[in-house]
Image 1 (cartoon, rainbow, N blue to C red):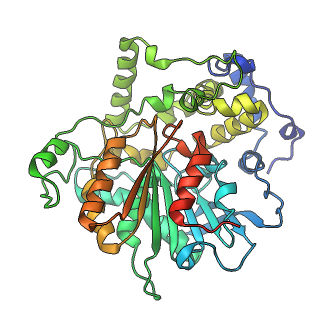
Image 2: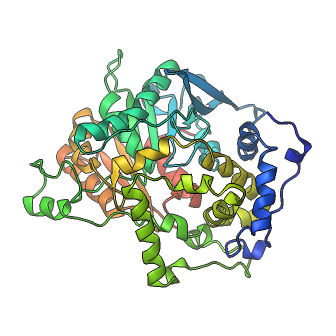
Image 3: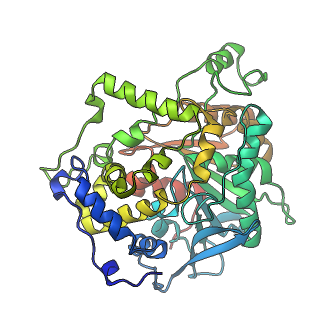
Length: 450
């Protein structure tokens, strides 16, 4: 870990507070940031993001937090941030559940849950485990295998690359009877993990007590699905045909174009300006989409382009961080810089897990193996309660979430699945409106807070 004194001096972003979203890193500022990043370390940038928590690095007397690297097969390891509430030896969650496991989305990492660790770990006796998926964040980044994706078996091999490593990590950490929460691609993989590994334990209980899916990708039926010819006795044939001819996927471009303050409605500074990218010329948006499709069909990761920019990486990364964390910037520009540094490191790591996305999802980010064709019967049979959460400005397919909840409950003949729309929030609802997000989640978990 570097000990340079530069690490103790916050780098001032090269633009004024009131124009954070409009401005970008200049080429010169990006060059300076590139040189500066050589003096930082993964450990340092992560600790700076987590330092906002009242129990890290030092305990607050109620919670103890630590960073753990758990070895798994093939000389790899899973990186984890674990928060242990030591107020009580008995968990305040029902059924003796002690552990909550958080899984981030595509190209993200555990640091994105910085707004959620405090609330989730406030449950007496609980342990919160946030992990970096294999191939992402600060977990190992092995070469991603050259998987095909033409058949059901092909796609499942891609899923297994991730979920087998999660299972190996879970076993080594001796976690049983836990709550599993996943966001976006992490929600998809959490579902795949449940399908493969949620088996009864020696005590007769399921491995997974409850499943919380936060704006998961991969739910909707579509014309590209490898499962579309399989009959479904629980869905009307006309409706099933309509869904299986669907070509509309999530509005992925909004991840790059929408800023946080517009989604949340937080305008702390009256002079704070925002770019409404929806007003871009149709030709410009069309070119962007054509470029994304071009990359997708060739299994080219957009992050390989970022890495190829060398000294000018900050200019492109800053376009995303200033929009995604515009609320944070408006409240604390120094902390925003810690976030920017963190994602600079994770986005520029060796390409690995990022290459899975085009093998699991087809063009338009629609799934090759839709969860809607895999989960309802399984969750009903295993009696696993699920909570499906979306933001009211979510770019993910919210209607698909509503539909799968309806299907699960129709098959179960009871409210086994729940749906909730979080106000003033987008795809990253856990960041945009953490207060309401926590309230809904804790109510679902039936946590008894002191």
